[in-house]
Length: 593
Image (cartoon, rainbow, N blue to C red):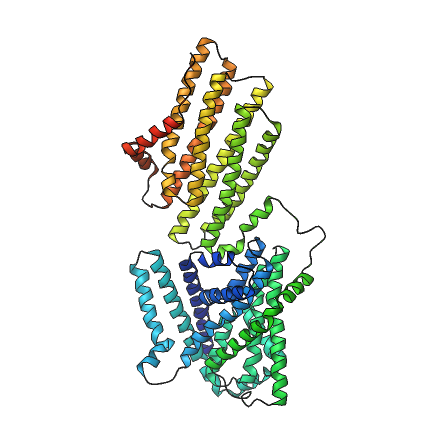
């Protein structure tokens, strides 16, 4: 085996890993976060959990990715540890799909159908189709499908390159002697675990073993412990991912490790005991890619079936290993909510975007609560407790903006689909609007405090008028928030007409106030307070308009804000009709002067 064979082997491995990564990313984008949402709805039924873990891992082609995802879910409080254990078992079975696909290269026969089933035959076809779709298609979903096809073709080409590079080893006696070492189960398990830990993929390490099997020098006796060790090595990814997470998230990684270690010990013990009494004739027989896939599947399937009834035991073992400190586990503060912004979710951008939307909705609810309380203490009776709560809410909203903004910037640097990219942009704008709405609530607290300290009171006429404007602002805020939460474009189009009515109400109230000043019903000092209140209410309405516009813009790439507003105002009966209806709904009380 020459230096050029070694270079070809390394290059083949690089292409194999790259192809797997491209294919996995394409599958993830095509799924659009749906796989993760399935996990969220997971029941506590262990069999359903196992089947889901199997299905998802078979799709994304990586048990490590599935387990890392679970660490994130449990860390964020989305999933319980008990449910995650069943998914881990299914993920180990699902990862065997890659080995079966790679084993197709061992098909033999002269018929056209058999030859077309060989990866070396259909991979170039997939590559041509995929490249053509990437080059000429503008549709995101088609491009994701193209990435899957090209990634698979590159993966298979890498596999063929590795197989070709190691072919000369069959004539090297020293290679056969080295492989004999791995008949020792301890050495074999360690070798498989180390290889997988280094390349961070059990599918890839099994693929390398399948490529080496082409030399005809690998026996069943040496392949078995290596395959079992590969399952242990794949736990390293989840263990690294769990660093800095909650106790339960660490327990997910620990359960994954225990599951594979216990399965390996049980499988090897049963196998070598039976071999000692019965004497399996195939132990010294040569294995190929298909046989490796069979062993890989039998091990993962049998281990899952045997350990499935002992989920509670594995859970208890995890709790004994990662113990809670006294007083821990009962925290109930805002920091717990930010666990949804888990760094692991950045690997699944569509899902991460959904988590950001959830937190943005919570941020909006806090801002809305502040506005409701602020209107109450400004118009009705001043309440110190409400003023303090608004200040606490403001601090919380500022924290939401900081954490969400930082996370969204990280998310925007990922390879996002056009839809997700636009969603990130929308959420960034919306969190800014919610933060400003909260600021206006604080400004209104200052208005209320000034009224309280200086013993100022609105006239009964002014109070009735302001209450009408408050109702309109409360309505426009409700509509804007519901439109954002439900992604309802029809609701979003109803914001601008109501915002127009709020503007008109403010103008009318200012004019009425001037007349009250002229008649001596109101003072200059009271006038400043009244004007500040109207200004803050009107600006809350403006930010609601911004939210609605961002939502509509998200669904129309060619959208222009100024053109949209002008179009609405010039649309005739549609816009004018809504303005008229809102004007009637929020008609000001009759003047008393």
